[in-house]
Length: 219
Image 1 (cartoon, one colour):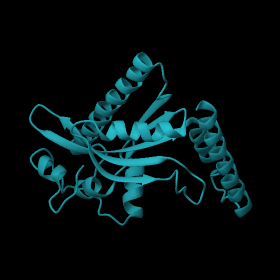
Image 2 (spheres, one colour):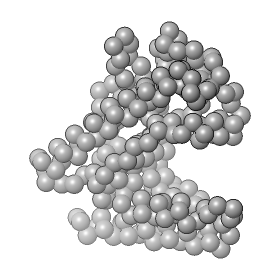
Image 3 (cartoon, rainbow, N blue to C red):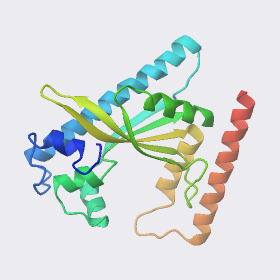
Image 4 (cartoon, helix red, strand yellow):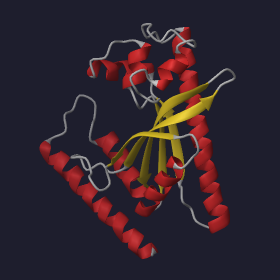
């Protein structure tokens, strides 16, 4: 959702829901918002599926391996808002939480990441609100991917609403590392040791070298 002095999303939603109200999971307002976020994911997921099928049919190339989508749980939303010291209102949620709706696109090669990024950003009506390249500048943990926060237009019967969707684009190797790291590094009631954290970073570097080697072999 586009953020300005009086953000586009809030202008669109003023007559649609009580955006200054307090967040309640079973409230009608919350259900309406989650519906809009789900529709934004569906819109974008459909476009990505078309790109995937186009490249397979016309160019005999698997640009996209698979796509995962998710809506953040109410508990996770509230935890993140508290961490960011936000008021627990719908207005604060819309303005400050960018990853309620999320799509992860997994592709074979590193060069595919930038192709997919450019294709998504070229979709008519899509707005790029924020992007971060964790491939050229990985996180300290070793995590690599390309992140984009998009404003995705959702056409309802009465109005057009721009909805924030976070897109993560990774190679299959990056996704393998990230999935294992999430499952094994952060076990319940256990803080990862510095030694273990360093080993995970080393594994990430190995994965990145593998990505680069696979890209060279493909060329």
